Image 1 (cartoon, rainbow, N blue to C red):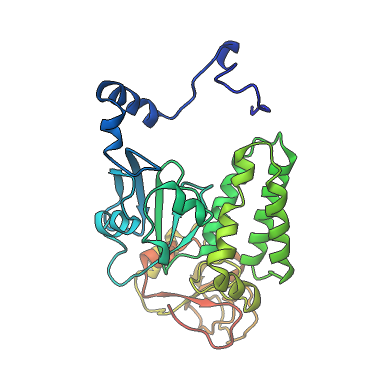
Image 2 (cartoon, helix red, strand yellow; image 1 turned 180 degrees about the vertical axis):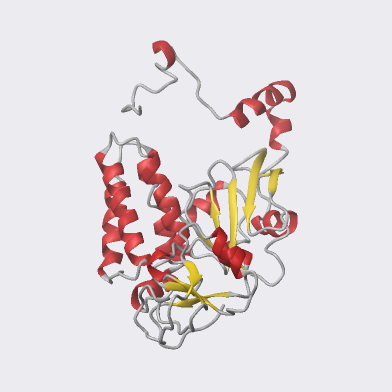
Length: 325
């Protein structure tokens, strides 16, 4: 359970004795520095961040992995060069550095050097070396909600500011992704951000970094969710719907068998092209025996599209003119 500091672990830690708390990478470097000297270590990296760093790169990359590189390398060299960048046909959209508490950056910041000062200036954390690249298929709003949920789950609950603030943050993001976002939500997010700065530990204080990055660098996408009730990436469950694109596709049998909610089934009766969503398939016309998706039961897990990509399409729920993806 977190405790108010001081005393710090170096003063009074395990069994009330002075204790040294560091991550394993620090301990791994200490013997090398002792053996070779600090001048040897400082020949790598930069003046502000000497030495090397292990980076875990993942996301929309051809070659994800863990690499040790000197501080000061360009983030583009690591992610696009070493990691291979996104698969063919896709373009970088943003970066999530430093783990769930690190924040979000736009793809235009890929040229940043891997050292703390430029990341701090952009309002994000370099953290322990995690870098996730995401492309245009990902939703910045959805990613922010995911990381905010992690922060909520990991809150110890002792500090009401952190525990309650992270809950409210997730509630606002969930409402936005389900089509119930309001303009005042932006002010509410800002108020929660300021409140969390008074949390007792860094976990609570860093919790709003992701939503802060969303507001600062992906504001247009956030406004689209709120004003137009539309998700450009088409992943928000309340702003999209899954429909049958090709009822004759034989892979629909497998998709129906794998559907966790059994919402893909053949129409028991003939249905009309009714714009109102209901158990008849959500406004999709179908003849007796045709495949339909029961909209209220669909949880947007995307398993069906993985199995039968040509048979399923995702559409914007609230637009009269719907586009196919």
